[in-house]
Length: 172
Image 1: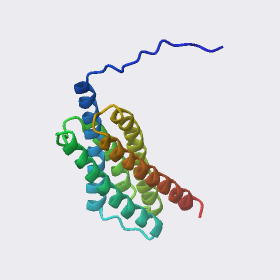
Image 2: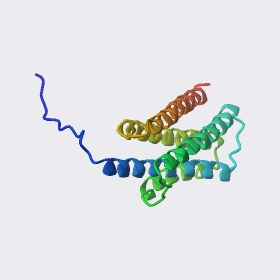
Image 3: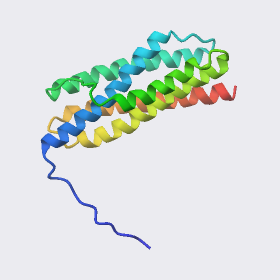
């Protein structure tokens, strides 16, 4: 049995409302990425697990590239990054980050906590970039969608890398 739903079409959404939605969600992911770079650099994570060290370095490098792309998007849209609507997301990623420091007595669990932190952030980023990509397709400047697509592709690659390293770490 197929259930038909009456799905409304919102092709006539006011451009200002869509722009506001887009910027608010871009701000949230910008906050998460800024948090990631700041916290990973400040923690100076040391580990004997070289794959994890490489993943952290690659993630920081990729996130800096993604932040640069987001800064270009803000310029294209005549806006600036705002931290006004970021408290909930920052609290979530901060909680994941703090779990790393709760495992100081066990290098194995600390490394696993780092991998979990990276995976949680990448998962949130992928979900956010997917929504932003759909919304960007309705914005006048098509360069915005291209920049979001590049960030999404990079986030997908980083997520796959983190999962691969986690599997390797748990199943040597």
